[in-house]
Length: 376
Image (cartoon, rainbow, N blue to C red; front, side):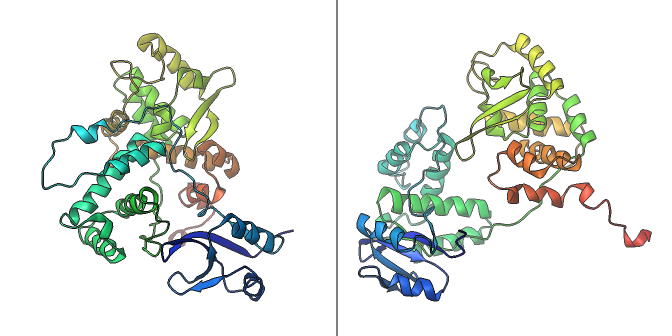
């Protein structure tokens, strides 16, 4: 049976008591049924019904609405954003910094919770930087006394200083992490508005431009990095995490481990790239990761970025080119060649074809059947 009605469960803290919030669009059936829950109440502040957060009440919710409405728990049951990466948590850089007496540093409890949740080191750096910027905006105030208005004022400051939507979202995440995860106050800042995500079309290069970039690589290592990013549609982090054993030449596949969303997947391996990789291996002799630095450590993200951007400039490409530009080009060129969008979705590791559909807006065959009115 298809359930057209759905209820979203939320964590609420009302009068310092944990509650289960039930969010749904106005519906007579749901409004009648929900009153059968014990001691159910309405919150004007959060505009939803709620009951005390107990295992008994949670079970009662599932039992009451079984076969009537879909219970959406994605906001209720805790799910770490951390990736289960093959790396050791390292926050030593936090303590090695010069300590200015007028500068507030991130609390130790914040770092400890990040480590406990197994957040990736790059995410840790982002959260610490964003959170410290916030608490130093209120340098003379106790951070535990700040409220929603204080956060809104800070966000208005970020907007006025023309910080990007992405940075503002990261700032909100870092702030919510402290109050909701470190202090254990679920949805204390439930009504904080996030900036609307802008819908920008991906930057895509032509096939000749891609080939020009590859041919302008300074050495075989750089050529393999650029070729793999494009021919396999890899994210930069996925390329850096590749190990020698992930290149499955007999099957002409590449195993992508611990990708976005903690998922493994396979993508395609180019015969031309495989030939270059074999020559690269003989010359560079990597020991663990496919691409390693001078001391056999994992190659850095910054180095990959420079390889791509500098080589694109050498090839005469006028627009900024990143590793993700190559990934966008991979998907678009497959779509233009007639590859089913569902296969492209799998190769890219998207959860839904809706994400992949953005490439239909830039694929040239989407417009090839349209006659320009000037040419009619």
